[in-house]
Length: 264
Length: 155
Image 1 (tube, each protein chain N blue to C red):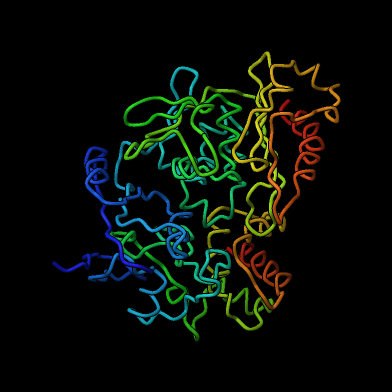
Image 2: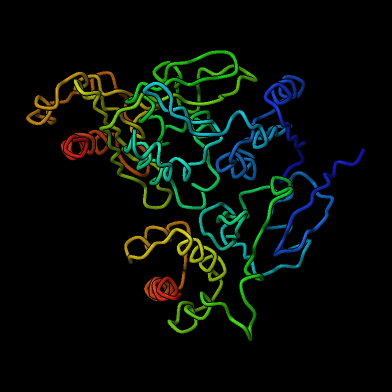
């Protein structure tokens, strides 16, 4: 691999100051995307700032009908957490389906959302659950966070500290994945707040999106809804070696009844 | 000033003090610097799991982590699992069930099998899903699954 400098700050302040001093730095979390990208020179930071020792980015907490998940929480920690299983079952299930076990042992929720891969799993859950991303300088709503493929609202040196999820006892994640990578060709997260259902889709377009056409309907309306008539007017679907745009939109229509049934 | 970084890594129950470059991958440290050749390089792109090791008790593909990230951590490689004349239970299970053909992927599968047991997996379905991330190119999955199920049943 090419030469770069490695830093391991122990406080948030130290990490952010290091970032500001360097030429082309990157924060390193679990490294499950960043290290392989650097090996292939798809990414070539001059400095890696390893944030693993920053304690305030760790932990899973419950507070006032919300679950707060530290940015450094690994996918397997989310998958196995009894707090998350109890309060947002779909979220722990989603985490258990990310990539493979070795990736889930290292990869983190903060790293995943900052990378903003259009086929990543978490963005669908963040949108559906109306999560808030807490950074060192502000709070960003999930719907404002994901801007485009691999692009987020984050500014240079800004760092995600945690993600806050409102508790929703009824939720589910359904994924049609690439057999090789387990990335979502179409992934859909559905949640119910006691009144209305909210469905968000990942893997299908340049970024995850809320399925506004059916959101805010009651469960009874959705149980008899004709998903074939969905038009996806504002969505530009991805077309690649895994699936054509038509196949992706067809997958969404065909997976939705199953998702809705599994939420309740 | 030297670009090398001082680290102490516990490898197979022995603290090793090293001065290493930041760009050195864990798998290259193990194989080239420490002559632990049991950890294999298959794809080098995080797919195949031949380079699987345990870091603090959890499986990680050693081609996808920098050696400096392992400072103060504890690593177990296939060399710590058993010896030729004193096989561990998991190795015995692979031996008895013909769980390998060419053997290239086997060290990785053994590490994953150990984590299967730690996670209390029991059914064939669970084991098959858990093996996602380890490739065998002799198409030996049937017997690998059989070996792991047999290992899971051992006390």
